[in-house]
Structures are given as C-alpha cells and as structure tokens.
Length: 608
Image (tube, rainbow, N blue to C red; front, side):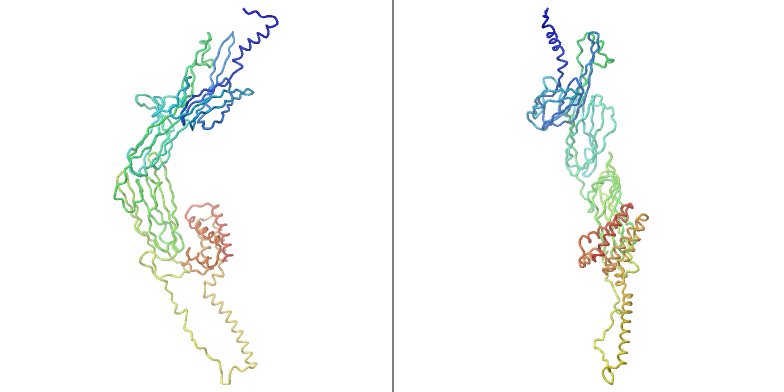
C-alpha cells in the first residue's frame, strides 16, 4: 500500500497518469524493411502508424521507388469499463529497389496529419549481389523465382518453334496466379535477331488447369516476331516485379470481451492483408530459323509471305510534260513492313520522281496483312511512244515452301505533242532513243548575192537638185514606214519573240485561272499552276516546250544569273504540284501552294 502525503499526493498522481498515457501520446512512425537486400531486386518497405496523412519519402541516392504507397487501414475495437473504443492502424507499403551495391543510410520518414508530425528513426540497409536474406523479424521481401512459384507462374509460349527466315510468328507472355497481386514492373527481352511488333494482350482472364492446380490465367503481352537471320535464336526470359497481397491473421485481443466485439459488425475481422513483393522470371525460348531454300529468282528481294501483285499505269496516253503514275501493289499476308522496292527499268527522256510508299498494314495474331504500294510519278518530256521493260517480281511462300513469280509484261504509253508544238518524226527502236528532229530550212535561208550593185546614170552621180532632195525625203519616209511594217511582220512571223513579250501577262492569266479552281477542281488547279510556270519559262527563255527539262532550265537559270534561293523555290512549287496532282488535297493546302506559287513567280520575273 502506497501512502501519499498531503503535499506530494497530487504530483504523484500526475506522474502515474503520465506513465499510463505515455504509449498513447508518444505515437511514433515505424518502418519495416530488410536489413540486407540484393542489387536490382525489388523488396517491400512498410510504414506503420496510427494516423493517416501524407508521407515524406526521403530522397536516397541509388534507390528507385517502383510502386506505392499502397495504403491499408485496419481497425480494432475494445470494450473497457463499459466504454467502446476503436483504434486504427495505417500501413503504407512501397516496392523499392537499389540499383547499386553498398551500405545505405535511410533518413527518417515523416508523416504529417493535420498539425501532427510523426517521425521514424533512421536505419541502414546493406545492398549486395545475390539473393537478399530475410530479416530476423520475419518481414516479407523480394524473392527471385525462376518460372514462378506454386501460386504465381510466368510462361512464354511461341506459336511456332521452327520457321523460315522472314516468316512471322507470335510469342505470348501468360501469367497464372492463385493469389491477389499487382504488377509493378515488367522488363521484356530485347528480341535480338528478330523484327518485333508489339500486340495487345487479352482483355479478360480465364480459368486454367496447370500441373493439376487451378489458376487464373491471362496473356498480358503478345509480340509478333520475324526472324532476320538463320540459326537457333534464343529469346531471353521476361522479368516481372509484383506485389502479392498475403492474407495474415491478426493476434486476438486479450480483452475478455474480445470474442464478442471482434466481429465484422464492428469492422474488426481477425484476418487482414500484407503486401509482399516478388521478382518473377519466365522461361526462355529457342526458335529454329531455317534459311530460305536455294534457287531464288534473280528478281527476289526478300519478300516472304502469301501475296498477290499488281503492276499498272494510270493511263496509256497523255500530253507531253503531263504526268502519269506507275503503281506496284503487294496484297496479302507476310513481311509487308519489310518489303523492298522492285527493280524497274525506265527508258530515257522520262523524268521519274522518287517513288512514294503507301502502307496499309494491320498487325494481328495471324500475322501482318494488308497492302503495300510503291507509286512512281512519271513525266515524259518528248512526244512519242514509250515502252517500260517487263517488271519481274518474286517472293517466297513459306506455306508452299516454294518461290512464286509475277511478270507484269511490257508497259506501253504514248506522249502526244500539243498543237502549237513541232511534231517529230516517228520514233522507233529502243525505248528512249529517238530520230533527230528534221526541219525544212530550204525556204528559211535563200541565196545572198555577194557583189554590191551600182547607182549611176548617163549624166553622172546623183545630181544634187531640189527635185532629187524631195525624192530622197520621200524615199526616207517610205523606208521608215516599211521598216516599221517589217518589224510588225517579223513579230507575226516569229511567235517566240511575240510570246517572250507576253510571257508575264500569260503567266498571270493562268495563275488567275488556277485561283478559280482553288475550291472546285483539284486536278485543274495544279494543271493551271504548272502551265503558268512551264509556259512562262518556255516563252521568256525561248526554250521550245519539247526542250523543257530540269537540266535545260537549270542551265538557262545559271546563264541568267538567277539567285539559287529563287531556283530552289521554283522547283519546290513544280514538284509539289506534280506530286499533289493525283492525290486528295484540301482547299487549305491548295491556298497555301497558290500563295507560294505567286510569290515565287514574282521573284522569278524580277530575276530573269
């Protein structure tokens, strides 16, 4: 029995009360983590407190947070002296990983809840190579597992284990689980030796039996692969970090009334969940890639699959300096994304632009399917018939294990001269080789008498009289009149000279016509812009339409000392018109091109 004096009773009671309340008032923030971990291996770090709030996670050099916080709140009810009280425990779980070895000191964690601030103690973690050990306290940590455990499996499966070089197949990554988990990180292999296209995994899970056990399985990743070399090629394992929710049993309360009040009605079940991190590694695969059979045709350029091929010209007749398309289209299933341009032997006197590649490919579990087109824009610069040598195309069909070939045959078209252009003689022989232009010059240059004549009369040389002077004046007037008339007739006989003077007006008229087609007709707009440019250069520089070519114009520009910036802008306008002429373009694009064409032609007129 403790006897308290009158003077010391109140301080003693307060002292005992302080001792009783100390565990409640001195709430702290506790951190649970392994003391020894492995480098580049995920582990679980848990922060426990009696308050909910914001946690300040200290910055630690070499540590990476993979996920978190994953917050879990558990409640416990107790009945003391006729009063019901509830306490809460808040657990914040993180999955972290150290990326280098060494001894690391972890600073205190701080939790702020309203005006309260809870602070944990600092601690140290040793990071070393190899598998991390468990703490003496028995807290869960990351564990490297090859092929998974009895509750988690990660399997890699290939649709084909033996393929030809260039043949497509799929590789699925499937996870089989018997526990609740969250994926926090996935490290796929590099797929060296394969062309790789990632596909979507399955949207839903399903039940599956494996080794006599029931699992919930789902394909979480799928890749469409294509071998780029022959031989036995390995696909390395996928590695995954997960957080597993382990069900744990909370210790029973020592309260004699615990069996009554530890009831779901009071939100205090005996069982709760604890987050445990794991590192899982799938199996590896080896794919046998067979080389393509010998005896490939000369036209084979690496196409593998099941294809149909079409080669066609957009038209078989067109005016000189107009454009047509040569289109080569592959349709089917195979390595469409890796198709190479077939070889085409074009004749001379054709201006051929770099081909445009149009891909319409859909990548599915069955492989890549769709179409790939190679489209040339061709402009004949001289009139006459043209012949493009037969286009030969071949590919390897892995289903038939044989090479397939397609021969497009000879492609023929005719370029026609305009009415105001000089017609050439018939051109025959090899494509692009023409006879020389023949002109009748017999009526252009007549015989010139070399010896001058003499003016004289019997009375002597030109008597200086008034009558003679009057006669000379009349002759001078008549001569001036004939000179003026002669110049007019010369202009009429020389259309090139006349066109040279009217080149600017004609170009402006054509651009105005092009402006009227901005919002109505796509083809006519580009046609008028091209006519404005080609017509201006033909008229101003005195180059016949048949002689218009990039080479001839560049020589003329160089002679006229035209600035390089203007020349570059000229070709940009012309090429953009020719490339856009047969495509779908918007009025906004045409308006922008029209402004550029007017600006460029203005600079050209000022420079020529």
